[in-house]
Amino acid sequence: MRTVPEWIGKDDNTAIPPRVRLRVLLAHGGKCYKSGRKIMPGDKWQIDHIRALINARPGENLNRESNLAPILDDEHKVKTRADVEEKSKTYRMAAKHAGTWPKSSRPMQGRPFAKRNP
Image (tube, rainbow, N blue to C red):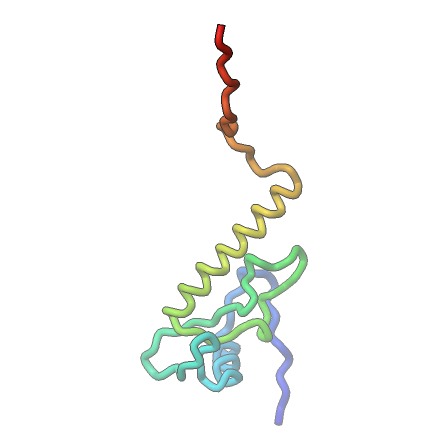
């Protein structure tokens, strides 16, 4: 059997060629990697990055064939939402750690001092 070198995109915006899409679909047995459902002719599906590009560490290239998998459209919407939530949480935690997260514009109100009887 002939081996083909792994496709690696030059950057995050490099489009995935059709030949690679087909190889990824065949490598996963024609199934959605999230639901496990067989992708039938006429089903809308996409190629998804298993580990999202937005969650990559600096200098890490995740736009590669080993990080790709077929996914049905409905499942992809759910996964993308989860990826964005993960990125937001990671950013908030890093910003708080660095001290750059905005502080509240209204300080928390404390209990007022007790009134003294004259």
